[in-house]
Length: 239
Ligand SMILES: [Zn+2]
Ligand SMILES: [Zn+2]
Image 1 (cartoon, rainbow, N blue to C red):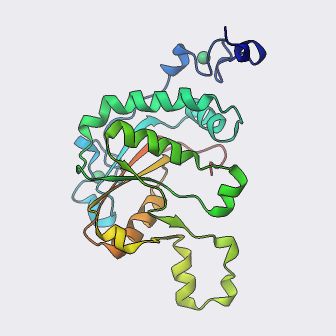
Image 2: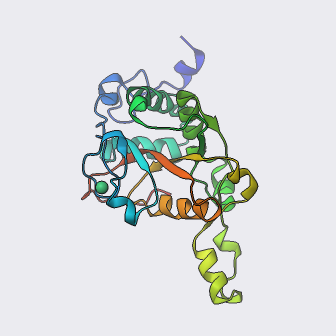
Image 3: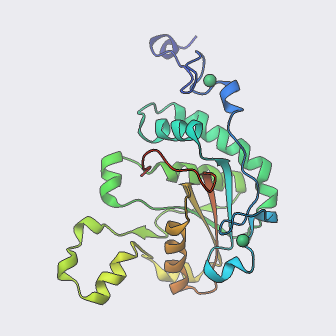
C-alpha cells in the first residue's frame, strides 16, 4: 500500500466508503443525459440544434454528459473547491469513459479546435487554475482534436470603470468576452467549447456571438459535463 494511502486514506465523497474518492457504486448513480436540442430540450439525434430552434440560437449542437443533480453537484464542488486534488483523476477518468460512449454521435469537423469557457484573470488568481481547462484538455485527447486556450478571453469586468465608458463601450464590455487573435480565428472553421455546467446556455451564446462577429460562418459546438432537468434549481451558484 502507498504511504500516502495510509496517511490520507481515500474515501468516497458521496457515501464515505473507503478505497477511492468515488466508489464504483456511486459512479453508477450518475444519470446519463439523452441527446437533446439544447434550446427546446426535446430529443434530437446527434445533439443538433433543431432548424427551428437555430433561429434563436447560434450554437450548432450541445452535448451533455450527465444530469446535474445533488450527486453531481457534490462531486463538481469537490473537484472545483474541495482542495482534494486527487479527485481530479477519478473525475477526469469518468468523463473520458462517458465521452467514449457518445463521441461517435457528436458530429465534428476533423480540424475542430477544443477550447474551455474562459475565466477572468482575477478568478484565475484566486483559484490558481481553470478547472474547465483540464476537462477540455481530456476531452480534446479523447476526441483526437487540437486543444487551445485563450482562443476566447473573458474581460476583467472588475478592472473596467463603467462610469468612464461611453454608452457604446458599456454595451461592448457587457458582453464579457473577446477574441484576442482574430487572424487565428479566421484560419479555422470549427470550434468546440467545453463547459462544466450549462443552465440556459447564455454564456455559450455570448461566446458564440463573439466568435461569429469575427468569423460569421464558424461552426460552434459545445460539450458540457452537466445540465439539470428543465425545472432543476441550483442550491448555490457554481462559479
Ligand atoms: Zn460511494
Ligand atoms: Zn429544439
